[in-house]
Length: 360
Image (cartoon, rainbow, N blue to C red; front, side, top):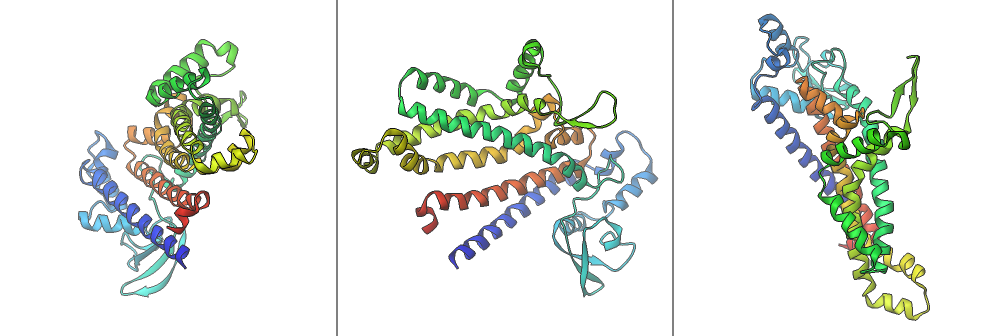
């Protein structure tokens, strides 16, 4: 029962966080940024077209009504008017769901969150735009964090075991530099060096995405070599953090009484590290990994744009340049939701790594 109540509490907190994010996004893009319809039209002043855009997106209503429309679109459980001309009429939008209970002059509906339609890519839903680019960002983020975790933990453990040696000092400097370099700077530097200056040796290009069109334009092919440079760039900073955290945590664990007891029983260094040190040293690493993985989804914006990686980050930049507010808002909400889900999953990992957290 305690596990169920804890899960329900976390879900409640997650809903509260997402509600706050949705409210902040609405204020930023609908109150502080001016008229979205005029932003979409740019410098053109066609009043009939402006009126049609406002009616289509519900922008001709008062701000409180627009806010209700926005939350109603996002909510899985929503209310929809029976009036065909109303913005909230179920048939007027590309909802994935169904109506089931009549209330007043409308019905309750159960549906997937509706992120509306792109203002620049006519006829395309924001969910389709995000669904096309998010997997590429996920591949990039997962690859980057795997590089950082695997090499970071290994280097951190070795650095702790050989404290103050040349290996430890070298990787301390590398880790510090990695944490200090901004992603956009390291992206430009790595793209220039490995994708241009040394491209004849590396065989890598400065730009490219996960899928490329072949020379004859007849189809797409998987280009995994394009993943190397952006994944390396995105993984540099978490690599430095994980090295330092692992080193500090392992050094602290090695000084515990039970480690000395294990050594007294005749266990060698590898056995002590594998059986006792790693599991008891990974909590701060898990914290760093969860935070960095979630932030990578947002921090990949500059990296994807510089390397031409067709992911969600590059899509956000393109949408901002085109003033495509629904795509930007939907992308920010998607990243926020993923951040919340990752944090919930990490809490369960804590409980597996440290029973004291589970009991608490």
